[in-house]
Length: 429
Image 1 (cartoon, rainbow, N blue to C red):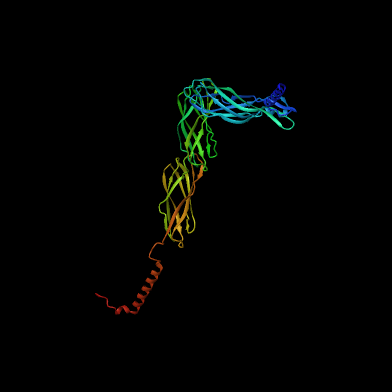
Image 2: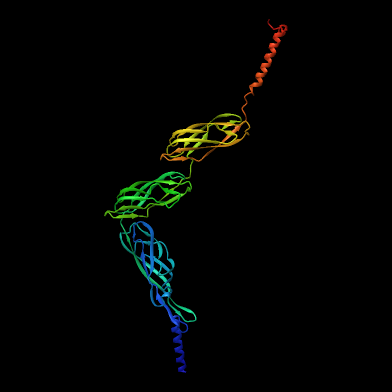
């Protein structure tokens, strides 16, 4: 009886041992054995007080290969189901986003987990440790039993730390932003750049490089000079907005490069601002003074033209376009210059054929002009309705009247020659 119990115990221990290693059946050969080795680092080690930024934690895997076929190395060195979490115990920095799932992290590539962090204005300059928690699983052994492939799976939780530095360098904020940007026009963005850091900035320069096909920087780099801590300086950026743009608010980055008090080149890439882009507008406002003409008639067409731009324009050449039954023998105008908002009256000739139907007909006029930068531009056509009215009542043609008078005169002369008037008594004679 005891012998039977002893045998059962031995069998049970064997089964337990086999289960512990994940091996079922006799092992034919060990294919691979190893484990991942994850290390953490940060791409940007400096942050500034009062900022919200992204903390990018990079994971690299320098796996440990213990034994087996080198061709199976990745099977046992790859970390799977990797979850990264960042926390800041007893540190004046707040992590605002939760854990990041990265999936697999192999030896062949670097993986990055991004976390939103906030640095309060009260944070003292210095170095701070961010705690990084890692959770993942991996295959410790890969064994070929001859009939099937069996893995020994393990999981691991570990903690690492990364160091970031809160600096007291110069840093900037854009205030008092204004712009006159409109779709299809050139304009400018103006504002003030304030140094909200603790150090002075020397030879500061702003960079404006919008990542947009419809907003074009006419000057990408603008020098703004020295800005002491707590001081502001004004800036102006010339910009062109293409006609394909939309009239919507736009956010732009405005990196600032400068030299610190030690003459070392520094930069603040977190500066940004928001501007509204206005809708497209007509370069000119056109108003017909007299927009009706009788069928079969001809008359001058007077047009009041107003410069609707925010800049003076010169050499304004107008061209009228009219289709049958309307026509013009003098369809061009010229105005030497117009200030912004200034109005002038130009005149073209207009005729309507006698067969014209009594109704409204479309005409248009466009203008080629030179803007304040000396660039020649062509406006969009301005459509106008011209009303053809009934022919003017002018008493009819004078020819029948002349013929009638001649007939009467001829009759009177004939009677006179025949002496007929001698028989007519004239009263009072």
